[in-house]
Length: 438
Image (cartoon, rainbow, N blue to C red; front, side, top):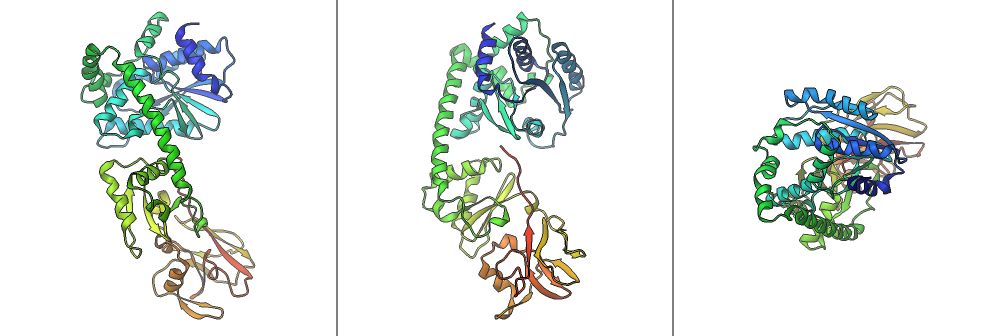
């Protein structure tokens, strides 16, 4: 067995109980070598089910021939192939948009106990470190590409990250492999290509061990990031959990424990917490956190991020995304109270106990609503909501139950969500905002 196969099998040993190893197969040199190595190992070792996936971006005419090439390679190796077509969103960075589309497709395919294998190598790691250094990245960014991370419901693994590009090229020549060449890889207008073809050769001419040294630095930074993550988990322990409105189903943190930390530890803890929810902000955008943190208690500050926004309410910060940022419908007539009532863009409501007589309708706040409470008489709804402490962002979405023109209940709120005799209660299941980010 050649050294590259030995290294690959060693890196994959902890993952041999997975149900599927799926190779991200572009048809280029690196992924062709990875697929060939795995198919060869499968001949003599008991491995998980091996398959390949090719993502077709449709960005250039030459790419239209690549799925056929990939199919021919996979057929020769006896590996099933899935071709996925994606739509790349227009934006300032075509490289980034294509990557997001590609990894979005990979995440959708990767199920529990499955592994997506990509073919990045040591030279890619060095280029990533240099690229992020030039962009002013912090420790998390400079730790470059991890060898493993969650993806979809499974994991992504880079088993060739310790191998050099030269090792892969030698293997390809030795085994007479054929691969496609992406014409865009030679275009220096793309930053990574400029680094690869213009900068890295000059560095290597002066420092031949530059790639190995930079990869080692990335490993050190990855270790440092691990320590920062440990610190973040310690700092977040006092802020997570609790709260009076768990039924909102929204990620949230108590604000006071964070305010007692130094600014650097605040940013570290929040970065750790936000990393599973959104793309993280750059240094200049952290002023949004300071504005949110320091706003007066009566204010309604928000901090907009790439994939959602943070709001304040009830002494906590709340993460809103997806349907929580979309408009809701105008309510609905509840024809059959025995069954849950879907609310457009706003989850659904249902009763426990014997539902009140009709006609019933769900509405939302317009202002000036009044409720009659047992022993308290007629009360202004706005004042009742203030007393409840319900965050302001949720008040416009709170389902209100009307019997003709009489306001009977405000869903989920103790004392306001049921009738005086407690024969029934109105329950609201809000929309979920789970994005499945890694």
